Length: 112
Image (tube, rainbow, N blue to C red; front, side, top):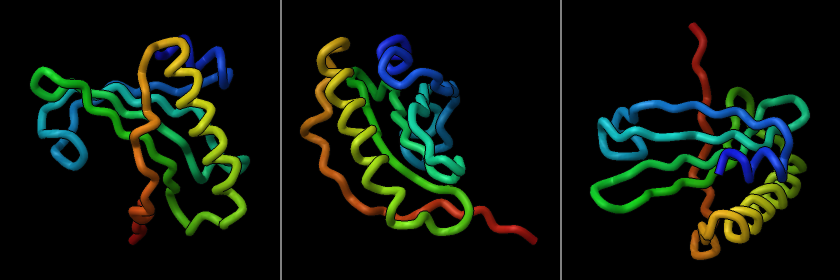
């Protein structure tokens, strides 16, 4: 996946972490790939992949940190997510086409 996303999007960022139970079951090892970001870096499209029991769980999201993302940032992000789905299916046999897009809110950092 790493190689495929780099080939399609250029520079990507990858973080490996142990989930705290918020997205995956607590203690799950997860690889996160940030392959697209808005021009101001306020929004990112990411894939998170982890093994849960004997299955692979994938989350694919576009989220922002800080102020609410402007509406014009969504169409290019959705296009990038669609492209990621196409290249991962072609190169890695990972089919994301069954995932439905759903607005779930935005992460916001609170400052004291």
